[in-house]
Image (tube, rainbow, N blue to C red; front, side, top):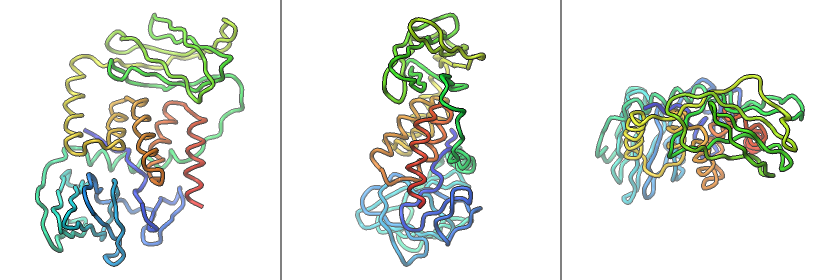
Length: 314
């Protein structure tokens, strides 16, 4: 499994750090520094500290850098996902550790369990390295009535939704998938969402025409690619999904990254947005939402999210 798209940096405190292209917020980190681990699956009282002196409580995912410490109260436990070793370490209660490139240093207490994360952490690290460019606003070419859709997308009977940017309630749409044509009404929401009936297995071309008063107002010159998961592929998918849920159950952020890797960009967007609705101060997660919004060609929503992200940097 890969999971590489994961938060630009998890900075919950005043020691928040972004790469140079996103504006550095913390003096203790360099633009090139990458996290060595990520703290996940927090239960009870758990704290982290960049310097071992000033401690901050944490109740959600957080990237950890070299020299940072984590400690658990007598009622607290958590997991440390290591980027370099593809291992997960389970911190017992009343434990304090320090993160180093060569391994985890136990200052007190113990690590109650160590297990393989397969390639999960490698995916996380690679996504972290690439996510920065998706925080840049790309200017759109005016307000003419044109429509772009995701160049490639994966769907299945469990995740059959397609989305595209709404052009207003006065327009409707023709969705072409292979030889099939579907009429989709417009709305005044930010996006149009259509649940595709079960398609032929494998790959199909698809495109969306804009209709006005039953006439085609815009038709794209090229079609995009849609992949419908086969029964055999579903077995592999749900096996990997079960492994993820074992590592971090009910974690919308990590679930979003897994689904994005599998090509389920729409449902990945849903999970990122759900995570941010429940954790509105988790601005370090927004670059990952920005990425999928760009892949889905949802420019208006992307610009709104970027404005929220930029406001946090001021």
